[in-house]
Image (cartoon, rainbow, N blue to C red; front, side):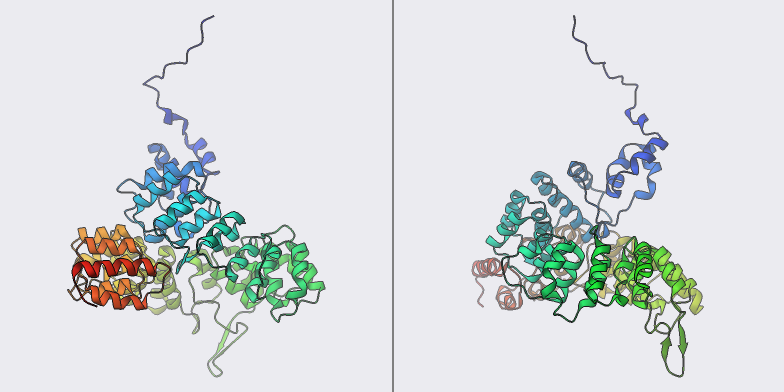
Length: 542
C-alpha cells in the first residue's frame, strides 16, 4: 500500500483566515499583553485592526512573565528599525530582562544588540533568578556588575529561591546583605535556614509575614515579638499572597498584635475589598486614612477599593482658623494614583483633590515624572477647570516629563505648547532616551555642554549615543568636563566610555584620572586601568 502523501499547500489559501475576529478575541484572552502587541497583532491586517489598542505596552510597569517560546519572536520584532522608535530606556531594558530570563543565550545576545544598552545588575539578576549560569557567566564576561545603583543580582536570585545561583554570585564577588534575606523571605524561600547571623529589622519582619507560611512565621516569632514594629507584621500578613494569610492574621491577633492598623497593605492589593471586608467582619476593623492612601498610590490597588474606602471614611473638612484637616488628618495623596484616571476621578468626585494640602498641581508633577500621559492629560484639564486658566504649563513641566523617558508624554506637552528649556537634559538619574520627542527638542535648542552625551553614557544607553551623533548634537567644549562627569561621579559603564572616546568626544585624560576618585562602582579597577592606559597612550601627565 502506497504511503499517504501530505497535501500540497494551495497558494490560493491564506493561512491568516483562521484569525476571525471572534476566534482572535478568545485567543487573545489567554496571552500576555506583550505577546498581543509584538506577535499576534502582526499576523495580518485583521489582527492588527482587532488588537489596535495594544500598540503600546508599559514595559517598565509590566510584571507579566513572558514564556520563553515567545522570546525569539520578540527579539525579531525588536530588531526592526521602527519598532523601538518611541521606546525609552526602561522599556528597552525590560526587553533585555525578559530575554535574560528566557534561558536562551542567543536571544539575550540578539536582544542586547537590538535595543542598544549596556547590561546592568538587573539583567544579571534576571538570568540568576531562573538559574541560567551560562547567561550569568557571559554577562559577567561583558563587564556586567553583580551589583550597582540599579540593584543587586543576589537579591533576585534569593527571591527566586535559586540557591546554586546565589552561591555562584557570592563566589564571583556578590556581598551577602540583609536585602537578599528579605527578598528570600518575601518569596517564602527558607528564610529560617540561612547560615549567617541576621539583624532582625522592620523589613525582615514584613518580609517573613508577607512571604512565608504560618509555620515559618511561628518559628521566627520568638525573635520578632521582641521588636516594637509588630503593627507592620500584621499588615504584611493581611496582604500576604500565601493561601494561609487569614490564619496568619488571626494567629498574630491572638498573640496580642494590634489589628487596628492591619488593612493598609491589603488595601493596595487587587483583591483589596475582599480582604478589608474580612478584616471588618472578623475584627470589627475600621478603615483608616492610610488605607486610602495606599490604595490610591500603589498601582495594584483598584479604583473599586478606592471608592469602597471613600464611602466609609469621613469627608475632609478644612478649617482656615486652625489650618488643619478634620477627618482626613493629612492629604489623601500628592501622587498621581499610579497613572489611574479612574482613581483620580473617584478622588475628585469625593472632593479630595481641590484642597490646600492635596492640590492637583502636585499630582500633575508626579504624573509627568512617572510618565503617565493619560493621568497627566486628565489633571491638566482638571487644573484648567478649577483655576479657570487656559494653560499653566511651564518649562519645569517639560523637565519632569523628560525625566520619565516617555516620548509620547513629551510629544503631548509639545502639542499643548509647553515651553522646553535646554536644561530638560539635565536630569541624570532618570533621563532615558528619546527618539522623537526629546530629540526633536534637541534640534530646536542644541545643548553646547556635551551633557546629553554624558547622561546617555551614564545610563549605558548606546542607542541614544548613536542617535545624538546622527542628529548633530554638539560634543561640547574641549575642556573634557562632560567626560569627567561621566567617568567620575556618574560612573558610566566602560563600554559607554569607550564609545565616547571612539566617537571623538573631548577628553582630558589627566583630569579624567582625578575624576575617578569620585567614582563609586564595582568596576572601578577596570575603568581605572583603561583610563590610565589611554592617558599614557596620549602622552598626558596627571
